[in-house]
Each structure stands twice: as C-alpha cells, then as structure tokens.
Length: 627
Image 1 (tube, rainbow, N blue to C red):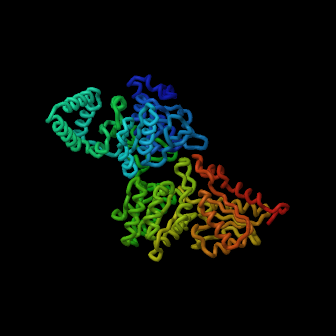
Image 2: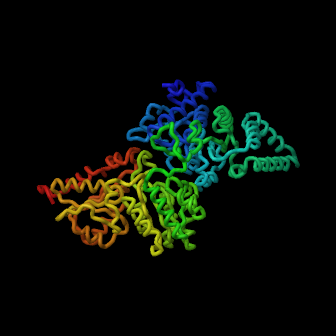
Image 3: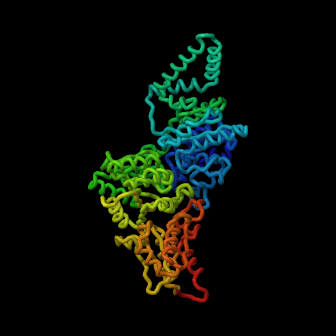
C-alpha cells in the first residue's frame, strides 16, 4: 500500500507508540493519502494538507473522547478522521452511505460536534468546558479555529464569555500571516521559554514572592506585568486575547509536529484558558495548493499532476454567469455594490471585484454584518447586491427581518447554492431560504436557466424596482432540458399543455425537470397532465391563482422545507379563492439529508420524477384510469 505507518493507525492510542522519526514519516504518508483520495472523490484539500501536524500532535497529547476537539470549520477534520478508525472508508468520502466531509458524532465518538458552518467552535467549546466543570469531569476542551473564522463576530462573543475556564484551549490556525525572520526567531525563542515547566514554575515563584513583600511588592508586580504586556504588544499584538482572560502562547510553527507536541503537553499540564497561535502553510506538501490555496480549498475530482491556472474563471455555472451579468450591470449603474461573506470566487464575484473594486466588499465570515451593512448602503441611495450561499444566508435572518425588511430597504439578495447541494450533506443544503424569505413577504425569483437569470436579474436591478427582493439559483450549471425553454419573460409558464388536463405538476428551479418528466409519464399513461414552471415563486400573481383553479389535482414539488414552504403558501391561496381540489405538496420533511448526488437526494425524499408521478396515481379516482 505504500503507507506502512498509516495502515497501522486504527485508533488514536496507536499514535502514542511512535517515535518522532516515525511521526514525521506518518505525516508524510497522511499527505500522500489525502492527495490520492481527494483527487478521486473531491473534498476540502488545502485546509487539510495544512493541518496534518496539528491533528497528529493533538491526538498524541490528548485522549479523545474524554478530551474534546471542536473544529471550526469542520472541513479541516480529514486527518482527524484518518486517525480515529475511518481510513478504510475514505473511498466514499462525501458520497451516499460514505463518511461525511465534516465531523459528525453519529459517525464516531471522537467527533465532538457537527461543524459545517464557521465561527461556532468557541461557543460550543465554552459550553462543553462548563458542562465538564459542572459535572466534575476530567478532560480538556480544544477549539481549533482558522483565521478566517475570526472575521465573524460570534468568535468574539465566545471569547468574551470564557469566564476563567481552566479546561479550555483555543488554537488559532493562522494560514495567511507570514512572520518576518527576526520577529519570528525571537518569538519562537520566547515561546520556547514560556512553554517549559521551568518558566511557569519560576513565574509562580516570583509572583508568590512579590505578593509577600510589604509596601513595594504589589506595585513591583504590577510594573513587571505592565512591562511584559508592552513587550507582548510590540512582538505579538496579543493583548486582545490576554485582556479577555487567555494565556497567549505563540506564534508556533504549526507544521512542526515536535514543537507543537511539546507545546501542547506543557499547556495540558497547566490551568487555562490558553490561546495557542500557530502558523501553518495551507496546502502544504502539494505545490499547486501551496501556490493557490483558494483554488484548492474545496475541489471536485481532479488530476493531481495538473494545476489549473488561477486566473482562469471556473467552469460554466450559475455562479459565474451571475458574476458576469452583475459586472456588466454595474458598469451601467454606478449605484450597484456587491457584498459577499468570504465567498468571492464561489459566488462568481471575482469579475465584479476586478472591474469595480471600489464597490466590492468581502466582509469575511460575517453574514449578519453583510446584510445590515447592505441596509446602510441602501439607506443612502446605493443598490447593494448581497451574494451569499443559501445555507449561510439563514445566519442573517434577524438582520433581514429587522434591518432590511422593516424599512423596505432597496437590497437585492442573490442566493447561490439554493436547493439541494451534493456531497456536503445536512449542513450545506439550501432548503430554507424560500420558506423564511416568504414569511416576510419578500418577492423571490427562481430562474431555471441562464436566460431567465439574465432577464430577471436585469429586472430586479432596474431603478423602477424598490424594496428587498431575492433571486435564487442552484449550484453548478444549467440543466440541458430546461435551458431549451429559454426565457419567456413571464412570471410563470406552462411547459407542457395537454388539452383537457385536470392534473398539473408545478415547481420551480431545477425541480421543474422532474415535474415535467412526471407529467409526461402520466400523460403517456392516459392521465392528462400539464407541467407549470414558476419563475416568480412568491408572492403569487392573481393570474396564476386563477389559472390553477381550473385543475382538480395539483402537485407542487420543491427542493425546500415543507413547513412554511412555497407549496403551503400556494395551497392556502387556492383555498382562500374557494378552490376545492386535491393538493399534493412534495417537499423536504427532514433536515437530515444525505451527502450524495442531487439525483440521489431527490430519490431519498421522494422528489424524483417516478415518485412524483406515483403520488398522483395514488389519488386518482378509483376505477378511473384517466382524468
């Protein structure tokens, strides 16, 4: 197999038997394993290559699950999974019935918590640490946080509430900052002194001695403390962490396992809370990922011997199509601004950022700030377009309600990855936005192809349109079937019209393909059925309600939660109009969706064409083959 050491690691305790030379070899084998496997399955590559030594050192020192490791964000947990008995399951990483790309307590007792979104680890760790203290349980709680997560306010909310926890360690995995040789060498030397038992022993002895000296003891101790703070401020810029109650240690070379392990052993023997600042190389060990970690953050299957040009736009998709469209609209309208939350490339905004840098804002992992910031821009006459993945937009719901919707600020929401999202599982599904935006009455548009995206984005950016509105679109490229229908410019279309039909299938976005095929199946079987595609999915036009009242059976299918979804709104609107037909609502009734392909997810929740057709067959009048 070429990985003799890695193949011998079946649980964390196996790591503790290795000497340091073997540990170094193991780290190399882990990198080779990750590169070989992720190139086949896809997944998060660069972040995992950068945290190999950290994860090995943690498991060499700690004893999970007594000790807890909480990852932020969880996509850097692959080495952790390798070392905790899941090596043989990596061939199905992020695939149906395979292992998740994120920590999941349902998979292993070594996974402390599910972690698909950022900024959450510290709050979780504080809660776990307090639970241990209340129950008088031993063990250290460790939060591993990337520097990107520190752009989100929740991290600071957590830091402000550590309450002197002595069983908490926060590790800042800093993979963006480089330290100059002089400052770095001095910092490493002082860190070495500070992380030895002798240092802490001497520190305690000096403080105890000064406390006992009358008159001058306390002032002298304060003077020493103030001088030490000034020195740290000059060298580490760390007083913020110390002011919040942490003992700050670092920067430490996060790709030097021996140094990390020694530091962690010392920390584990001292009461906390501790804040360990490590510096790692993102993508370490794979040159293309080191040169361009952004391109190798999350990847599909790829050729490990090839390196894509970072200046070339990603392959054709709704995201890049949207990005080009917005760039062109902004050239004509100087009021348009673009806001994203650490997803410039993912949302296709690199084109806008290049052409209109003064009107482009990447606020980091701070979706709440992004939305209220947009409200502030809109209040002063600008036209902000907030581009956020559906799964992350839900983090800013209060700001949408309070800061945008109450005053009807002129904000456009561009919601990427709406609907089902392959591979990432329950933490990344875009199944809530249509439901929660409709609750505040916001107009929502869901184009099914690029032509509709082009047309309706232009409409939503027109100066005649006021107030908050949203346009949502799926991950990846347009559906070949739906692209053939182009754009009629209407808010809804009847794609399949069968004379005399009393049954209709209704949907929006990518799900339209399944309802269309289901309608065709039923029609071929003798049950005349129409297929209706919504583009403006909420609120409904009077024309749509009038048209739907002509059918006796309506099936509404959507890649959205059922409770509060668009289908529930439509059924209520029809009932209010006096319609007394049969309404079938096919939607998501479980939050725990599998990490699988979109087709597999649809099948698992009953939204594929065959199951939709069967839903109609089940309610056809008995004894009647056709309707």
